[in-house]
Image 1 (cartoon, protein in one colour):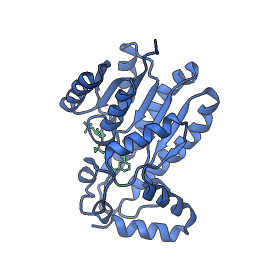
Image 2 (image 1 turned 180 degrees about the vertical axis):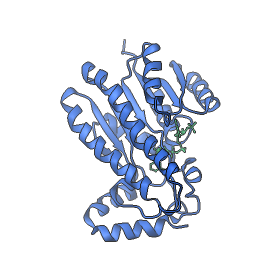
Image 3 (image 1 turned 180 degrees about the horizontal axis):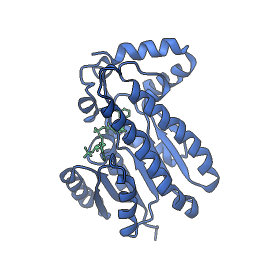
Length: 259
Ligand SMILES: NC(=O)c1ccc[n+]([C@@H]2O[C@H](COP(=O)([O-])OP(=O)(O)OC[C@H]3O[C@@H](n4cnc5c(N)ncnc54)[C@H](OP(=O)(O)O)[C@@H]3O)[C@@H](O)[C@H]2O)c1
């Protein structure tokens, strides 16, 4: 009989996080779904139990609260679950001029995108290293590969996630544990609206579906990759960003981020 594996997914109430939960349910994992909107988590939990028959728990938590990540870790321990995989998908964007956007909103975004993700990695990774299996998928972005005028702090937060994840990938690899940065380009989800990006050139083009991002992300993670960029055009963009002079990539980003 195969071992039951649990995956904890933050940001599971919508978009890429919800789709990642569906993909993990599809490969037989039990799920712990984390976000603030209880009704969305309950609806997804019901759907996954019905479609895949596995166990699904929900944890309603605000990861922007100082003790949010610790509360999630404690709640998972209380359920006597030793997660095989952690997915850090909770994250937000904020579009606009750096000096015009309220500083507290930008600091809150940094807290969620970077601090909460880092705390959750620090809390859950030791158990994984001890057990010598599983790992973490951190949601970075194509935004991580260049500076992003008109969305400056968001791009910087995703560069942090990419750098941290690559480093953790190497630290965890000798233990048989995989840490993967999932770096999607513009993707269908609630993100453009909550980030105030709906009118930007970036989100006017054809978008990749969150389901496709999740499928390719889980395949890359299971294959032990450090960085996964779903879609040929996105993989090409990530490579080009590395090769082009930085003044060009940041000006291109400036153009596409504008409304
Ligand atoms: N969509 C894109 O184009 C794109 C591209 C590259 C990378 N990404 C990254 O992918 C990740 C997922 O984004 P998405 O596109 O799926 O957007 P989304 O549909 O807006 O999902 C964001 C998720 O984060 C959760 N969340 C937000 N604030 C939270 C908080 N304080 N505490 C706990 N959970 C919180 C939301 O749930 P609640 O509101 O219920 O709490 C929601 O489940 C993000 O890290 C984003 O930066 C997105």
